Length: 513
Image (tube, rainbow, N blue to C red):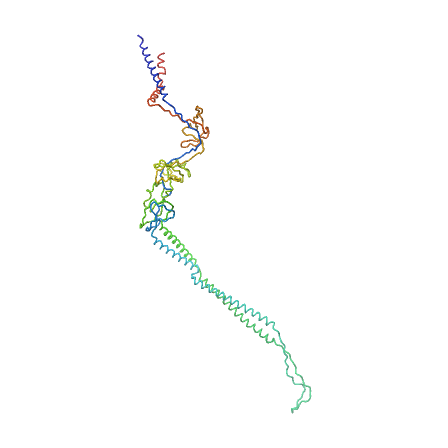
């Protein structure tokens, strides 16, 4: 009988061979059932885009609760719900009787204040009085002119007569005197004739006069001329004094009191402001459209008494639909043809959002509908909800489809960076280790690793700056597919035994040795 140790060793050896054979067969069949799919992508030129996404709701670009600015009773409503209106169109009116009466009174007060100022500026004289004063002045001036003309004529006549008198000719006359008694002649007492003797002749004397008859007439006129000149000078002086006195009298009557002017000017200013206010109140009895749009809510009715308060804009970020508009508004107007999305971006992403960036808007209710948009407002003020800081930015839709409705839920993807006509690869085909990037290039059936330089990393693709050329074929990560669960299980078990390596480590070989 052989040694028992012999049988034990042979039994162990048999079991070991059986196990190795079993797993060898399983490995062969597992490899046959396992296939490795090699996926490749070709380097090409395209546009690499990096986007930031957020969600919000569709709302009108402009929406406003329109109310009267003054109080009163509604006398007419000129629009209906859903009607399209244009800017400046009258939407409703209030009874304007009171406002019109107030304006008419204010205009009368302004006219009175202006008249008072005009009267004060003229020294308190009415226009007829001013006209009378002006007529008196004109009459005095005319009297002066007439007196001056008469005086001038008299002075000319005096000068003429004085010249004529000075140049008048003089004449000479002879006078015969009676003879004197002859000396030594004796006359008889008896009256007889005298004795013959010589007779004495009479003597002749000569004298002159100042002028003839014509000369006397000319020189006598000078005295009358002097009298006329003196009288005319007095008349002229009196006319001049009358004008002077009239001017002094008018100046005294027309004294302008500065305090009165200031008071009247203040009254005019106050009256003008009252007219402006009353005109504004009258205009506010008409409710007009602040912009062109659609009436999406109408609450006011004829006969209703309104308290005023004015219109107010509706924030797009707080209004998701027309149903959220204020029920107290007389009516609500919105631009349904111009729609926006106000989306809240987390603070880390909001810093990348800028005006003018393009965006794509997708709608939850319209699976096959997208719309292009543009960032038109970036809100500098954050919103904090549950300790999460977001910034509400506005994206305006470009030509939104008619199927897009106010209030719809929407997602926006804003393009914050892009590179056009760039070499690009799917980002999944690139392996990265720190600052280094590599790809596996397939050429002539052989795979080689190549270092590359990347640029903009987009949402799904990456820009290639160097290391690859258009047309290069790059291997994407492999995907291993198994034939079934049983094979997979066997494979796992095989891996487990191979990992352990207990039998191959030398247990049997060592024992046999």
